[in-house]
Image (cartoon, rainbow, N blue to C red; front, top):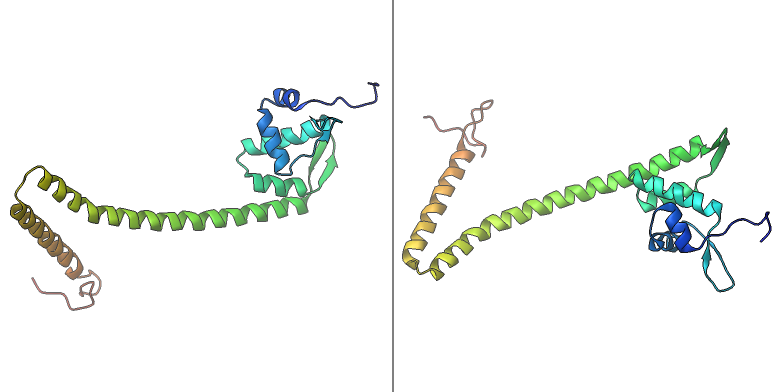
Length: 184
């Protein structure tokens, strides 16, 4: 090798130098983030530019950026500055817009998960008494007594719900059902 030819590293050597696994480097290549050269035997070989790109990807990942966001950022041009490069104002705006869109998507997913969680909690609350009844029946308790206890519990819950829905609103003097409040 001449002094002018760049030093090329194998996957294992590049991964060791970057402090990651060889699989991580291969994964980033599969995602199209890096395109190493290949030896005659088809082995991946990484040069200094590849290592700088990997280091940049790893820094962005450590800051919490998704691979999708990183891919978008790497497509954007860098402008030269003293001591290195940085994103142009236009690139920064495009990156900001892409991240803002991802956040909106995540907020929508969070809201959907919250609704699903609420539905699951409601269903759980409906099933818990059934499981309790079955376990107590299997333990040998009297079915008629258990059913009477369930009826009483439901009646008590319905009475509490009715009191809540008929309670007068402080502003209007009407119940939450819209009917005039009962006088006490």
